[in-house]
Image (tube, each protein chain N blue to C red):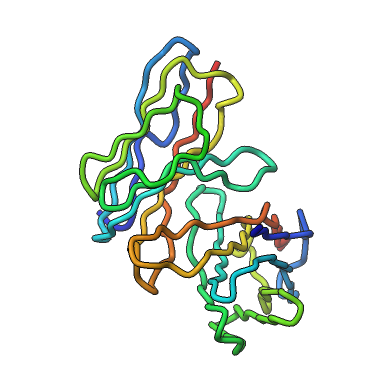
Length: 114
Length: 118
């Protein structure tokens, strides 16, 4: 495995379902991120974890719940979503606190909420 | 406030043409980083380049080149002799310089969709 992986790649769920998105990074980084990418909008930063501690929560609705059990894994738990939550959800990782601060992204999970 | 503007929403060129993607940024920080990412149809954002605010040298990597102009707050990206495989959405992004334990928040532009026709 290389880089940043995300599962599932595609997800269709109803508004009453509960599902989780998974992200795993194999780069030895210490920071992980969730972004939402909607059509014709800039990427929106949702959550940031650094050293497994949440350091950023950009006013994201509580129906999105992140979890970072260790520096290599990041989850996004979803429940009672709305159709407007349909988007591409991207995970990224970086080495926080260093000059080599570029973020490396996974392929994303394409989420459709019916 | 930090902001990145990519005024070109879509560009279409024919293979072998040169194309320049524009990026204009706003920041009050004196130390910052600029990035370009490529997002092919597969969805994954691919890191292309990072440039810090103290280094205004232009950079060339194969068919790719970047022109950083602090005087105009621009960081433009040129693809020479474009190929069909260059078709993707390209994002410019801005980040404050990291401090110890700070996180590297990226401010993205809205992206430019480049279509290279055979």
